[in-house]
Image (cartoon, rainbow, N blue to C red; front, side):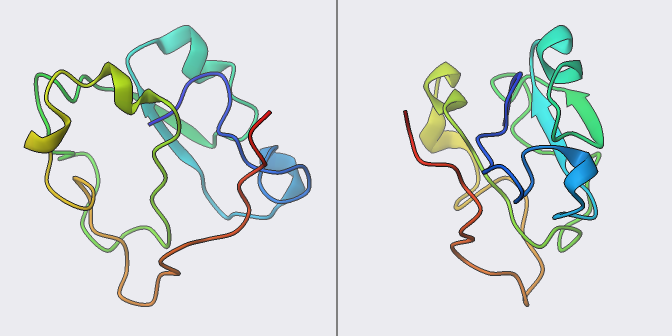
Length: 103
């Protein structure tokens, strides 16, 4: 889940041009914010409150899955599949480090 930022560190995914990630797909409910995200290669407007499954993505199609800040918009966060509504690849890093420190 994301918005105008993905909270990725400079040089480590903050901008799609830095090449740190081959693909950053962002998901949220505000199209304008998602389109403004400099890390995003593609964006998906989706309301997890209405549909907790992410049918637009196949399981094991990502190396990492982040949820930054937006979890407080979920009406029933415990209703989502755990740990995420999308399963990363088995070879995925469970706690990737390129997140920027909180301000």
